[in-house]
Image 1 (cartoon, rainbow, N blue to C red):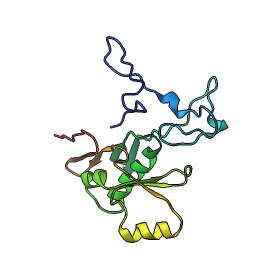
Image 2: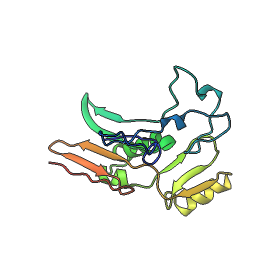
Image 3: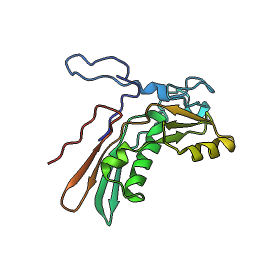
Image 4: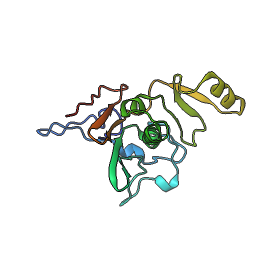
Length: 174
């Protein structure tokens, strides 16, 4: 349901004879305290490059169960926005009663502490909510898309797929 190369086409290096791209996950390390990575995450000393360390990662392939039975699987690429994209999709199904496709297609927003700004897709918030947030001092930066979620919801007699319209994804079942 999910994969990551980190940035678009990863390191842009294809493994000869195998036909797949190498990732560029090294960007998830903090190259220098205070310097943002490609997703705008401002790193610190704790995430510095060092031998035998793993970088900070937001990969969140998720399995949701209900009464010890599989309910849904959800995943997305998107760097630091992965966790919020997955959470919002799960919340849309469980709390808001959306179909899997509606949940995957719904507008998203994200905040990652530093920089101190909300990124949101166009029309993610009502004008009233936007005004209220701005009045409280929040900065809202509108972006084209956040994440590219693909997910499967297990229903009693069928499986319901959701493919994100932000990408070229397709959900096909049988």
